[in-house]
Structure formats: structure tokens, C-alpha cells
Length: 94
Image (tube, rainbow, N blue to C red; front, side, top):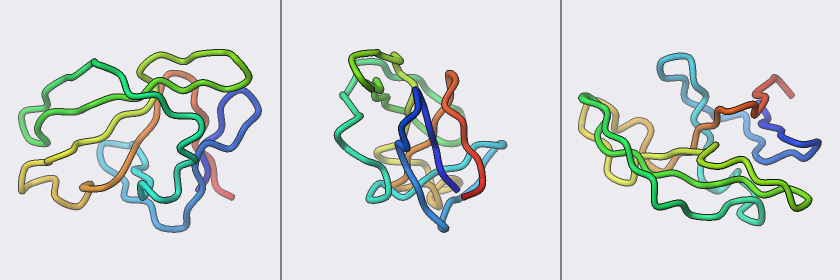
């Protein structure tokens, strides 16, 4: 799978985990050059507290378009160390 936004490949991996229709990419498969940590946090009752990154590609920002669970609850332990995308980021097969 690959995640693209604004014409750039943000992440690419054959090892994604799908939860609630979202592909979670291994952290190491995501290009850190496009990620800027955000102060945004949300809480999921069964996954835990999510943290976010803003994507920046060619000077354009997509605020909080990537999220991850730094310490997921036991029910979501399969997404530990993984990042998912939304807000116009296209996730498609390679």
C-alpha cells in the first residue's frame, strides 16, 4: 500500500494493519521529512489517546492528516508503532 498527498508518496509498505477501514503503516515506512508533530490529541474508547502530525509537502500543509497511538490500549496493540492518514491522503495499492 502507499499513501500519497499533493503528488508525493508519504508512506509505502506491504505490511499495513487495517482497523476501522484505515491502513496503519509501520512508522519506519513513513517519510519523516513530510511530518511535523502537532499538539492535537483525541481519545478513542478502545484504542486510547491518539497523537497527530501535520503533513507538509512543497510548502502546503495538511493539518493533523496523520495520526498514531503512542500507547494503544491492549485491544489495539496491533497498531503500536504505526501511523494512519486521512484528510485527502490517498491510500492505494502499490
